[in-house]
Structure formats: structure tokens, C-alpha cells
Length: 152
Image: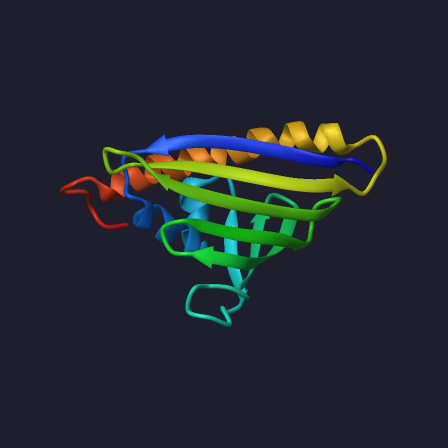
């Protein structure tokens, strides 16, 4: 089955380290994304977060994910261990600082559908979902990073 590819971006006025801090803290994800809840199944094996296993629930969907790469201020990557009817899912969230101190957030995911012919359907649905995630992350990071912003 063909590899499906998703690439969504957003730009925030927040610095890359602030965006990365939100990505590293799975408990913040339901705040800035459409995800319903977060549960930490296993803490990270390393200080950078690699090895952490997270469970996210939205409605009846339960996804179990593992952080596989974390470069402070630059990247967070995770893989789907179980959940959706897809396989080989990997997301790389890359952060690129802008000249004015903000950050371009690129959320790139690849996967294969478990059911033949369903790849395009999953890709369209996940593209919309991930665009909401990246937009919410950009907005939330900007809001909490602005001078005088209340702490969350």
C-alpha cells in the first residue's frame, strides 16, 4: 500500500524553545489541539523526552504514541504504537526560527492505511486534524509567550 504524506504548517510569534516546551509536555496538547485528553503511560527514558509513551483520547478514538526524537527548540518526533487503522505512522514536528524571533512550525506525517483504498480518506481527515493542531499550537504559544501573558 502507498505511503500517505501530510505536510501542514503555521507560523507563530513565539520563540522555538516555547513551542518545543508545549510539544514536550503532552498534558498541554488537549489545551491547544482537538484532542480530548492526555495520559502519560510511561515517562521518558531520557531528559529530552525520548521514550515517553502517551495516550491521547478524542471521543471513542484512543491513540498510543511514543516520542522517538526530541531536539530542544528544533524538533519533536513520535510514532503511533496503536490506535487508528493505519500503520507505520510517524510525525516529525520541525521548528524553524524566523528573523523576527518567531517560529515556523512544520508538522509532517507519513503512514500506510491498513485497509486497501482507505489511505486517501485517512489522509484527508488527518490533514484537517493536524492543521487544527498546528494552528492551535501556534496560537497558544503566541498567547502564552507574549509579554504580560497569564501563566497557563
